Length: 219
Image 1 (cartoon, one colour):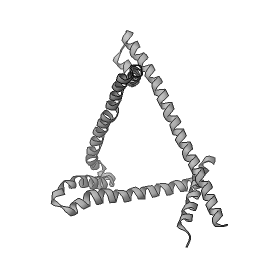
Image 2 (cartoon, helix red, strand yellow):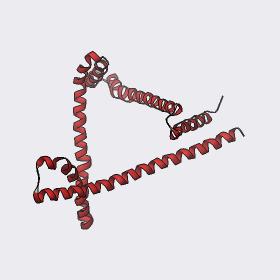
Image 3 (tube, helix red, strand yellow):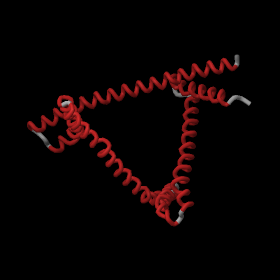
Image 4 (cartoon, helix red, strand yellow):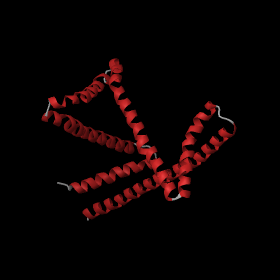
C-alpha cells in the first residue's frame, strides 16, 4: 500500500504544475485543476454547513428542547422557502418574499458595521492622534476629511450647483482626497503583489521539496 504522505505530495505537486501551466495560456490541465478545486470547495462548504448550521444550531437545540426552541422554525422556513420556490422558475417570484428579509438584515448589518467598525474608529484614531501629536493628527484629520470629500465632490457637486469660493474649496479638497486615495490604493496593490509573490515562492519551494522527496523515495 503506497504511503499516503507520498501520494499527497505527488498530487499536490502535480496540481501545482497544472495551475502554473496557465502561464503559457488557458489549457485543459488548468481547467481540470480549477474544476477539482471548486468541487472540493463546494463539497467542503456543504459539509460544514450541514454540520455547523443544521446540526449544531437547529438539530441539537431541538433534540434538547423541541418546544422551547420553536423560534428556529423561522430560519428553517426561510431556507426551505428559498430552496423550494427558487428551484421552480414558475414560482421563483415567491422566493423573493423569503429573500427580502435576508437582504434587509444584511444591508442593516453592513451599514452598522461600516459606522461602528470603520467611521467611528477612524474618528477616534484621529482625535487620539491630534491629542498625542498635533502635527501628525492634523495631517490625519485633513486626509480623512479630504478623502471623504473626494467621493462627495466627485458625484454630487454638479448636481448641487456649487460654485464660487465654496465650490472651489470643496473641489480642491476633493482633489487632495483623490491623491490620498491614489497613495492608499498603490500601497494596497503593492501589498497584494508582495503577497502573490510570497505565495509563488512558497509553491516553488513546495515543488522543490516534493521533487527531492520523490527522488529520494525512488533512490
